[in-house]
Length: 199
Image (cartoon, rainbow, N blue to C red; front, side):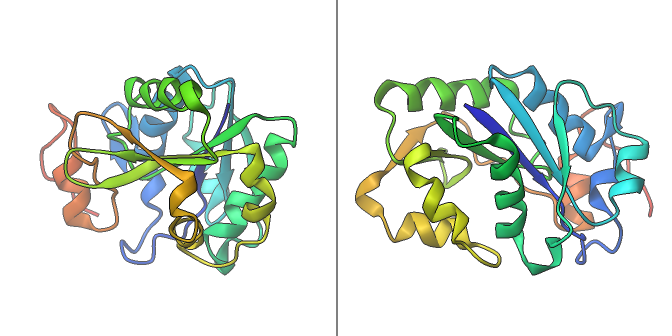
């Protein structure tokens, strides 16, 4: 199983690259990447796009392969396809992760992987106590459909169009928030780093 960590967005709502926001002893993306690299995923592909040079300047990349999506402005589907190209067609499945969800840690990633491997459904989404969300897992059988996607939110539309083929993997915790605004960022800061920061 290959992890595709999507971090190519331009952070328009926040007004600066959220990937570079201080988070703990690293950046927001650095925190997320650390957990993904610490997981049991066989390989990790990190997809960057907007402000890639600024993001990588302060990013400690371990075992992840970094790929650049020059078409990131067309939507997240293009970043997913860039990651899929790097993953290759011999993968059993890909796990889709978001660079702005620092609450998805290595333990959650490994739990989702173990559950998916029991039955290996066409696709799976993580079912938290209060909502469903990422990580998402798509089997190799779904790769052709992934390559046809366009724009933002396309993966969710794909899953909605195949309800009988999508498993829900329960994880006993609340849905980790994604960071889209300054308020989101302040609320997500880990202790003892939760003091108010300024842009």
